[in-house]
Length: 247
Image 1 (cartoon, rainbow, N blue to C red):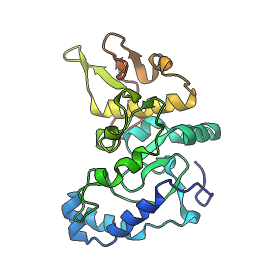
Image 2: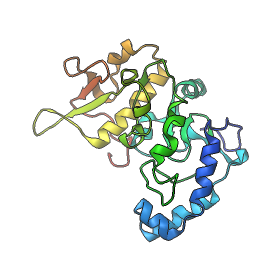
Image 3: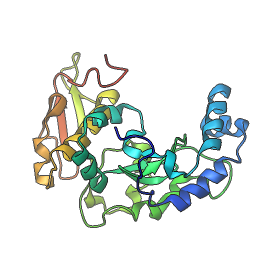
Image 4: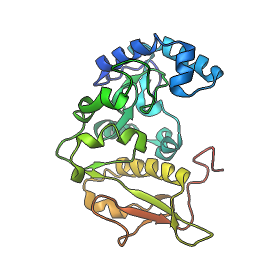
């Protein structure tokens, strides 16, 4: 992990992020409870985080090191080489409620603002509308995009991109009870991160190579797959230990 204090690039949509952050600083603890569906304790913590948010590059850290969750557990950022990180910076896009979209080495500060939150006032009530075309404009407009984001975030960008441009891998696990491929949320999240890691580490140059993915016990299923939804199935999930929920 790179040390805090290193110089990183500024997020592309920092002006809109600054506007949104300034607005969130005006919200009371009670308003945060209501619009984020938080407990009072969590709302107080969130209020403090939002109040402390700033754009000082001296205390920024790279986006790729800043997020937690099962997708990032699968990405295993801590073991990426400096060359991998540079490659990720040119190919990986991280969707964000506050920043819109981030590159791997964009310098950011702690925040708590999910894309699905409905804030009290216009134009921030609907963050999907707030980001709209501005977010999509940062993505490649002629290349295929591999979508491994959560649905909450893809809803912000997919309506603004050609459907044929988006490839969304699907990950299934064979159920011990039914012996049929089944959607398991935590497995899928970790697999999405692992898939992104595979694309980065192996510098996958073409969508024709997507069937080669075989990490965490997954295998490509040609019969269930389509051109825009490659399907991968695992009989025994090999990502145990990557998430605090799977030990």
